[in-house]
Amino acid sequence: MSTTTAGAWSATVNDQPEARRLRRSGDDKMLGGVAGGIARYLDVDVTLVRVVIAALALFTGAIVPLYIAAWLLVPADGEDQSVAEAWLAARRNRHR
Image 1 (cartoon, rainbow, N blue to C red):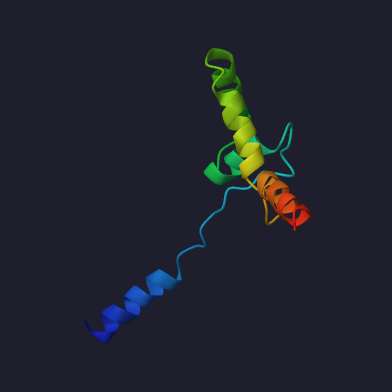
Image 2 (image 1 turned 135 degrees about the vertical axis):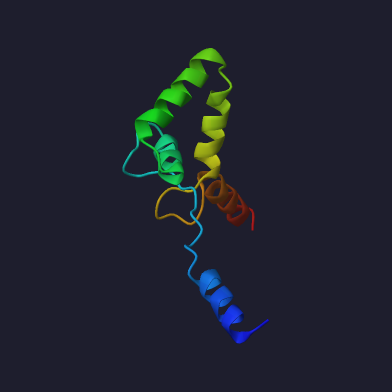
């Protein structure tokens, strides 16, 4: 590999954007901020995500447990831990 090729490869590797993380939204929040976080992650309008969630809830009902799981497992904006992680950490600390 020539130095020119190695330099070009290094530049493309280093110039890649940072990986996006799924977070519950604090701004676009109706229930738990899950739809707002998904919309931001997918770069789509939050109304579209809410309509899809509502349609799936009406027609299948399967989205309700998934929404609750996302609320428990996905951390909110500015938080390091999800609701479930914080709850488990508090239980561990209480039993020590």
